[in-house]
Picture 1 (cartoon, rainbow, N blue to C red):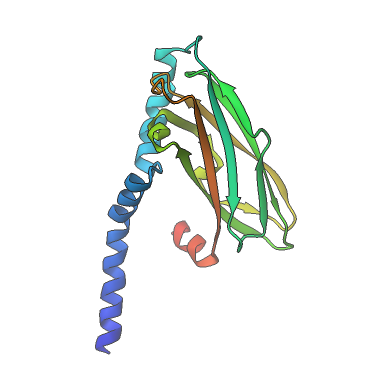
Picture 2: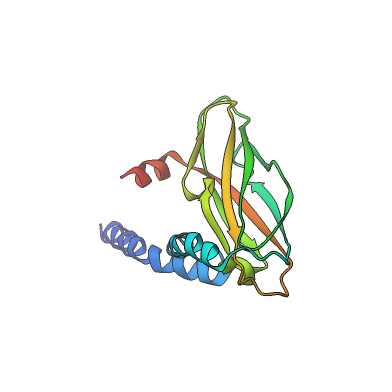
Length: 178
């Protein structure tokens, strides 16, 4: 009985520790947390517009996606790389395809390399903001609307946006819905 009670208390404590642990993980790995993404989204629309487009500079943005082996999906960017001017808004589509005959939910986790460019890459619309559910054998276009800040350091001429796509279990989906 004591072991079960201790386990329940430990799980409850871990639930409270998840938020600061997630923030620490995002800070260490350079992944944008929900708070950073919200702040950048709010600032991105205004700062990109106020700073304007940098006409005399080009940045190459590369796109990459990796799917976890437990997820029978295939996901690819329709464009592998794009030359952009800092401050311009761009729309890129990814194609996701569920290779199984059953409905499956997945979640894309973004990261930017080099990590120093993370704060200068703003996603205004992204399929990674929420879980995506694909019916059996469904193929779907998923949008990414982004801009690169005009304040991107001059020594960064290329960056890569990578997605790691993971399967979301049914219990995770139920917990997220509550």
